[in-house]
Length: 575
Image: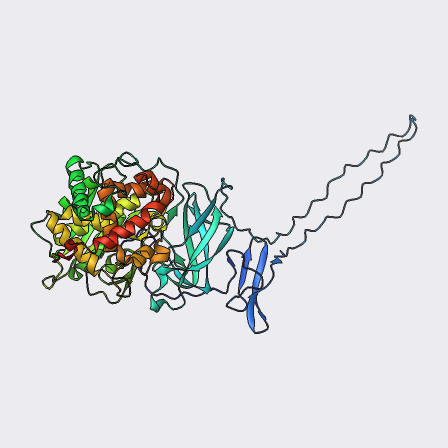
């Protein structure tokens, strides 16, 4: 059950680009830095840089001023003015000689001057706030790739002057087939709120969409306009109930029931939002549970998170491998009708029918549909979810398939709600979410909500919970930690960039952590954490705001709680 957002988690077709030898407008290269093709010329403003050979290396030359040759304008020779005829003393005999009228000599038309039209750059009004943007597309080989940022102004794309730029290795580019294309670009620049921009890539890159010149082109993005803070429908800090941080270690056996009851009570007390529109598509050859309404499961998820910001509309696509082509067409129609630009239409649908190698990383052939993916698009926050359905699930041993009981729908919809808290605060909600939320919370919250909501009884919930807690492994097949030292290393503030390899423990160990927090503050307290971060607080600040206890004090308590949970007899009840 992986997820992605626009331009964040993507799998790309392997297409190898080339660098043109013609002069291009790009960010200024550093003189003496490595270049790739001898003779390549880059022009930036009025300076020209050339790739030259220095010893055995190819490096960029110092910038030389572009000299514009022109045909000199001929200067016309002045026409001599004749001296006036002297006027004689008055005498009655001769008449004065008239002064001839002078006709001006025509000025010759100058020859046209050859000029090089300067590049017209985007000119922002706000030159105070520096935008620091990390790329989410085009895995690149930094030694043989380049990019520029373009802003859309009156229907024309204009290059943006970069204050700083570069590449950094990314976990999104770890597929062995990518080779040296293991990095994503980053840039700093000035740009006004509400401006649409895009990345243009050249060189050794991996990207799905290219223009007529062979350059890679990213999805459009927008610098956000400030919006009101994400709403939080519960009072903070949460009121103390039966279980608190002070007594939780003495009540380990009560945690699962208290957390499950908090979900049921929330569903009983909340009203289902009436303003969320859904588009649900199920493949014609895809076998779903005829006795379980798919739309009903989404309504339960909407009800659970009522009061928080949610997508105004969303699309959900269910399909087995037999319906892959039809699903691609349905998804493309959905994005077109909602005016959503997603150049990864095909890859978005195909990914959940491949093997997952980590969050947003899909490998292997397209022959197995079982996972899930979800996200939201841009400033509108339109949600979307892809749901892979097994062609044959008769051999399952860990309980009913999640899409047969509604838990997969609820899991992925919860991700949409997580991302929605950041809509308007950033053009990349998924990246913001991953950058601030600890990994155990990202998947732990979605998994706990889906298991507790979809389970019609406490016993059913316990079976789902224990199967994940005991069997979920990380990216190299290691089961989640159960000892104090291992749990202390895992239950930290590490985000996706630093916890990629252990991310999948969130489906098991993360569920137990979120369960404990839900037992203390109710299930909606965990979404309040994300909303507080969307308001600009750090995770420790958000945690203390929600629970009235500092993260420094709570973390060692949670470590002991989870270690103790693994020793409770109830943990052995499984499918």
